[in-house]
Image 1: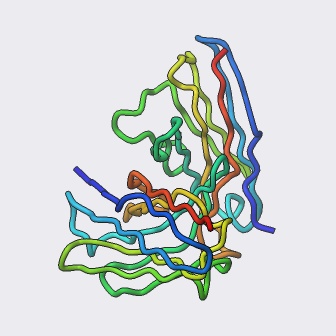
Image 2 (image 1 turned 90 degrees about the vertical axis):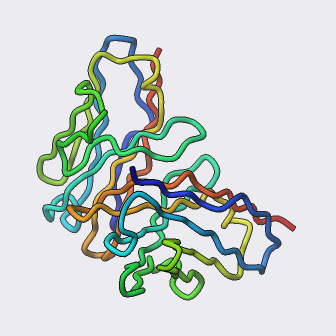
Length: 111
Length: 118
């Protein structure tokens, strides 16, 4: 089955560092397809945060970083701020589905 | 800059159809694939398929084949997504999302809420 697995929730205090994992399989992340990360603030559309595993679009603070290894990827957020509280989704391409796959999403709570 | 402006909220009865539009501006419409993604209330993102605005070619997620139709009108730089035989579990926000040419990632429209209720 083609899925991207994320933890349902993570939390951290302001100023701390948190990571969100995204675990896939040999038909998506493990096959070499890039991983993207999106931030979705309440009531808004998703916003591209990281593309092609490690790249930040213009305007995204360097507190956000991405990494990928094997069949998994991670999003790290350093210097947590209150406005980082949001849902975060990973996304990749899946060869078995011949289509796009999203993780289930992770809710970040800033304590 | 790239803008994707979607049509307004819809309320439909079970069994009806709904057609959502996505008007693109700030770039050459025919040069970028357009995808559709939906999000049920309180749930995650679900990919529905894409359309090639240049050729009109489409690819649908298996779950939606036969019930979803994606079209476009290049004269007004607008993509459309129609869902037929609506059910209550089709209640969701539907997003159009423009794919970058360099990879499988997206800019997003603002979303259109479709509510299916008798």
